[in-house]
Image (tube, rainbow, N blue to C red):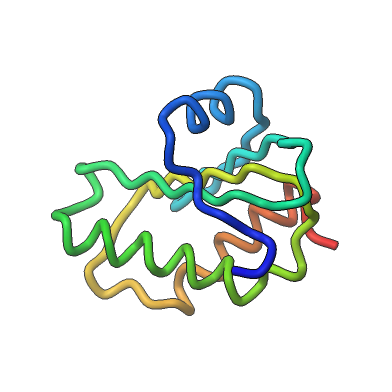
Length: 111
């Protein structure tokens, strides 16, 4: 990730949940908060309701890969938190990509 880091601390996630704005579709929720830096930070949250650890980690990897491939299309200086609502062992990149980009477009964070 050229312009990005990972969100890891609970305080950072809570700040984005509390002060950020959110948009949702049937599979994902995207929270966005301006962090005032020159880098983006991406955090992914996947509940145990989505599936076992293998499924949760698979969904996390898919979200991070979608973001990595489209990273240069995003505005700079944002904290992004993606909450996965549903999980499928057979979920593919092509299944997740349109949902994530749709939410980014609704948030108006694409260049």
